[in-house]
Amino acid sequence: MGVLVVGTVTLDTVETPQKRVEDVLGGSGTYAAVAASFFCSPVRLVGVVGADFPQTYTDSLNDKRIDLEGLTRVENGKTFRWGGRYSEDFNVRDTLFTELNVIADFHPTLPNSYKDTSYLFLANDPPQLQLSIIEQTSNPKLVVCDTMDFWINEEREALEKTIERVDILILNDSEAKLLTGESNLLLAARAILRYGPKRVIVKKGEHGAISITESSFFSAPAYPLTQVTDPTGAGDSFAGGFMGYLASVDDVSEGSIRKAMMYGTVVASFNIEDFSINRQKSVQFSEIEARYEELQEAVRF
Ligand code: AMP
Image 1 (cartoon, rainbow, N blue to C red):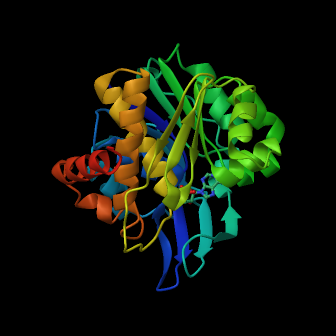
Image 2: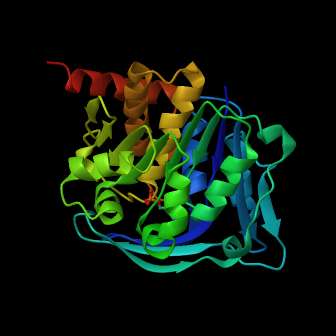
């Protein structure tokens, strides 16, 4: 089985305590599609870029065998740009700017061959766009959606309508609290279940991720790393690896969801070892399996 990823494809400017990089390949869709590509095929990406999007970045996505039929290029537009700065310990990230550019007027029509996808991942994007994609697909087996503070603050009403239609909502701990007004994470997750999703996965950065349904709770640790270079896209990589694994086994049982969270964690751990998707370019599947086994051992008692 394959995965349809809908998300942003961006030019990022990232400042870490060690280094600053400008206009590197980023975006929720980019990170998620690359992560999913380790597990399944085809991985289809729907997004939009401007005339300033470098061919070398398109080549990098092609190298990962990502189907780019759904990637629109607007010849008289500029690519979405985002800038962020990390604190000394990487635990705090300030968004320096968000320039929506071509994404502000992007109303994609799914190519016919994309409509019958079984696994749909709506990475961070305007919530109205996410909803329009759900409406264009014919009964996917699993719809997973990610969101972030920007959309919770700017487009709450539209976001609530989107969340109502998804099977799993993935977001980070501060966003779950922001969305619900609850300061306790479990209460926040339960409140989100009342919006409609059957499951909520809350990402907690270096503290791993938890999954909550009406009747289950699961906690996945983060992969222990001593060298962090750039955490940008870790959440999207987690979600992309999660979806890619589920599509590869074509199973959404509790057991597979838990394994998928572990695989997502592993792909995210590689992502943060370098800027942009640089580390993912060289990762071998055997390295993913090795870290997965280490994680299995880490939680065995
Ligand atoms: P993450 O670190 O997982 O939160 O993802 C960061 C990536 O998301 C960066 O590559 C950004 O370009 C992209 N991004 C930042 N803000 C937004 C937004 N409002 N909507 C969609 N994608 C965004």
